[in-house]
Structure formats: C-alpha cells, structure tokens
Length: 444
Picture 1 (cartoon, rainbow, N blue to C red):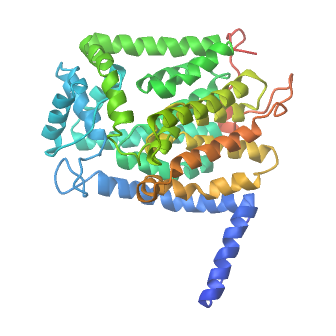
Picture 2: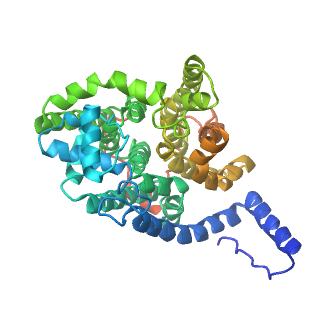
Picture 3: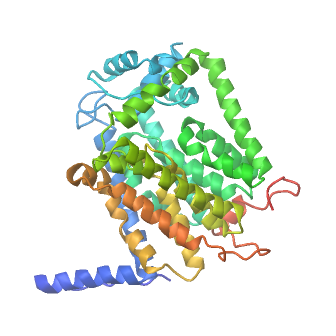
C-alpha cells in the first residue's frame, strides 16, 4: 500500500512553513509518498484541466473565438481551415501562405500568423475534422487526442493510476490549450516503442502514422532497419506509402508540389526568422538563439545534442536492454533530433518519464536526481513564460535532464546477454502485447 499522506493541524505561520518544508522533503526522499501525492493530485488536476480547456478554449462569446478573443481551438483552426480547402478540391492552398492566411481570416474574422508546414498526408485527418463545424471539430480533436494518449500510457504502464497521473502533466493541458497534435505524436511514439517486439505490425502502423511529422518519425525506422526488425519496418513503410497514395488519390499532386516548393520558406520562417517566437522553440538550436547566439553556434549545439540522442537510441536498441528503457530511449531521443521543438512537442517527455519511473521501480527505486526530476514536473507549465521573461531555456534543460536520467540507466550491464528482461508493465500490457507468433521476423 502507498504510504498515507499525513495531515497536520494548523499552527503559527512558522510552524506551517516548517510543516510544508517537511512535506516537500518527504516527497524528495520517499518513492511511496511521491507516488501517493501524484495520484491524489492527478484526480484533482485532470478534471479541473479538462473543464478549463472546454470552458475557456472550447467556448467563447462568438462562434469561432474563445474567451481570450483568440481563434477557437487556437492552432487547431488552421488544421480545420486546411481541411476545408482540401475538401473543396483546393488542397494546394495551405502551401500558398497569403492564400492560407486569407482563409484563416475568413474563418475566424481576425488576422492569424499560422503557416502550414505539414506534408500532404496531414490533410487526411484535417479533411476529416473539416467535415464538422469548427467547435465540434475541436472538441472531437481534443477527445481523440486524450483517448489515444490515455490508451498509450495505460499500455506502457499496465495500470490505470499511472495513466491518470500522466494525463495530469502540464504538457497535456498545454497541447489541449494550443489545439496541437503533440499528444498524438507522443502516443504513437510510445505505442510503437512499447509494442515493437511483441506486436511488430501494430507497432509499425503506429510509427508509420507519424508521417505527418517527419522530423519525429525518422528515428524509429532507422532503428528498425539497423536492428533487423523486418516485420515492424515493413508495416511502417507500408503505412507511410498508403498514406501518401491516399493523399495523392484524394487531393492530387498539387499539395505535394506545394509542400516541396515551400521547404525553403519553412526553414526561413521557422528557424532563421523565428516567426513563432524564440520563447516557443525548446530545442538546442532554439536555446542558443534565445541566448543571443549566432546561427552557426546554434547549429553546432543542435548537432551535438542530436548526436547524443542518436547515440543513446542506438545503444538502447542495438544492445541487450530492458524493454522499458529501450522504449524510453526512443521516446526521449526523437524530439531532441529536431532544431524546431515547440513547447507542446515536448509531450513525448511525459511517457519517457513514466517509462523511466517504471524501470526504476523494478530496479529498486528512484535515484535522488530522478525523484527530483519528477518533483520538477510542474515547471513544464511555465517553460515558455520562463524563456520569454528571463531568456532562460527551461524547456531544453528539462528535456536534457530527462534524457540524462534515461541514459544513466541504459548501460552495458542493464540487461545481461542471453537473459530476457521483464516486460514493460502490468497485466494489461501483457495481455495486449502477448508474444507474437514464431517467424515474425523481428530481431532476436
């Protein structure tokens, strides 16, 4: 049973402060108390966060604006607008920036500065959302992202409480408030990483569905290729090809021509001009630029971090490693490869931390720095604000702290050769990820 959380009678301010400090110290020294506190806090934060998203961002005084006066669903409005163009047979319009901005203004009645950088495969879900009006489409988008994320966390952890705790993470609320797709990205990465050996075709499907975000999707097929996981790689490649063919069949070649034609503009708008704001980009590249560094220094820093991330992922997947840590290594490394990492795309750090905690629990408990990292989770709520107000790249610091904690457990002796490590979770995971039939073609 988890350790009970003690309550203390009110006293003088100094006594209350001492009691609070004692409670915080207990969280930093006891896995049981930290776990119990996280579960109790999650059951309060999850319904509160969802209610705030639905009321503040999902409704408003006007049909297509929220209570802040921003477009309903914030960034989601451009997904809906692009989908509406695709349904009307004008799938190339999102890649024509002046036309796309005019479409957005027609939708929400105000100027927007959202540029469309996604490959045409993302027009498939965008068109599906555009079949509904903006408000129900945003609510459906929110529900689907939450449902898939909860499923992924449940599969990874094998228990409901861990999934609820993950849903209380500030990055979850961040994605819902922005109307972004970071929860889909984190969910697909997690499911693919956890199921790669047990359900290779399903894992490959999840990896392939990440084609809408190529800079996140590239790492998984590379690891599948070098480790000989043939079935999973075949499913991944087949899924990507199917998505590309579907987008060609439904929207024609014009969106693809527009996409490839705007890649240079994407680099200029996002990286060189930082049109979205230096405070939004939590990558190593963005951190250097935030601190006033040159483009050359920013690219050097990004190259170093990307090399470290690639090295960890290859180490975890090419040598005998606990499957939980192997999944954590992929999930935590994929975002670090990209020079553009907006704060909502830090969402894969949530399952990375969850998988790290599971591995630590089976290994005897969290280390002090790992426990401190989990206690620092509330800081994710102010990543962008910290960068904007102080110029401190808090997002990169938290990302590298999570990365270092996973790397600290992925060591040559973390799993002895010839011995199969334990699974990635509890009963639900074993049920869903039962061993695949012989001859699946996965790596030994």
